[in-house]
Amino acid sequence: MSDNLLGVYSRAPLAVDRGEGTWLYDVDGNRWLDCVMGIATDGLGHAHPKLVAALEAQAKKLWHVSNIFRIPGQEALAQRLITSTFADVVFFGNSGSEAIEGALKTARRYHFVNGAPERIDVIGFAGSFHGRTYAAVNASGNASYLEGFGPRLPGYVQLTLDDEAGIAEAIARPTTAAVIVEPVQGEGGARALTGEWLKRVRDLCTQHGVLLIYDEVQSGMGRTGKLFAHQWFEGVEPDIMAVAKALGGGFPVGAFLATKEAAKGMVVGTHGSTFGGNPLAMAVGIAAFDEIAKEETLAHARAISAELVQQLNALKDKHSDLILEVRGKGMLIGLKLVPNNREFMALARDHGILVAGGGENCVRLLPSLLLSSEEAAEAVKRLDAAFADARTRLAKAA
Image (cartoon, rainbow, N blue to C red; front, top):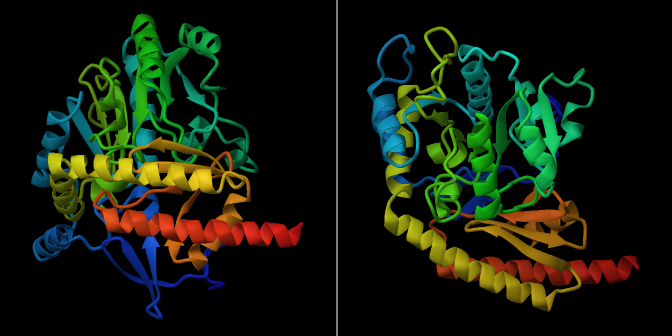
């Protein structure tokens, strides 16, 4: 490990070198079945040929230009997003955190131009994760991310997802600006919200003039088998939505989408980005969107996720002393464990499979949307071996 890098990551002893589809290789040529995929970012796997071709072609033309000029790629990708969603307008940044920041600013600015500047409160939920910038960690439901960084920002309210009465009361407050929620929590432990929950909150927001923000940074771009997770349900569309991760297929791209009404306060000078929407990012983003949005890609993701979940439930039955629950939606799958999840991640790595951590002592599987049936079966086989190893080690420790 290098002492020259800021020590904010608990890095695995794996020096990555290259990736091919579902497989990740280290500098010594060892390979792992990658079910992390940059934490749901490499939606089409590693080094997808169409994304590589798009990047190479654009790199020979133009890398960066200021947003004081028209960037045709932005207009093209924005049109694709608008055609496929509730939105009327799009703003491009570089990451999920930036998308969240823009969404929060848009919500507060909406009320300001409507003559209600007191409406600043943003309701978030326990277990949520919205990014690492200062507003994003205040909106998130993990207090530890704020430790040592000064006082909480004003106007951020935290509730629990199952507090129906509390949610209704908070939305009705005259100081409430917005509700922010992940339709499927990622870091919080792969918890999928129901259509009934989303519809109830959507209706309450409409009733009280509150904007609804969806954080689909992780659950969006095909991850659940629909282009966006909320699209599984009717009548739950948001006013603003943050997307990133698989939007760029591994290249840094983020965006927030909004209705024209919700975005009415975002006029010239109220927001901006130096690198957001640059030609390189837009070229790769268009290529990634066109592949992910294909019905055949989404249908494949739904089919393989069904196979994978069925096999993981069988694995749960086999290792019921170690696996408490299989949860999530589509290709965002969580296993709630008895053994420590961080220790199990290392065991899994020893057995040739990479998995991510998550809240409530979960590990997450976030494979490529193009995962094959054979690779899904191989993933379960390797997890099976890792759980058998975990049982042996627990027995020895006892």
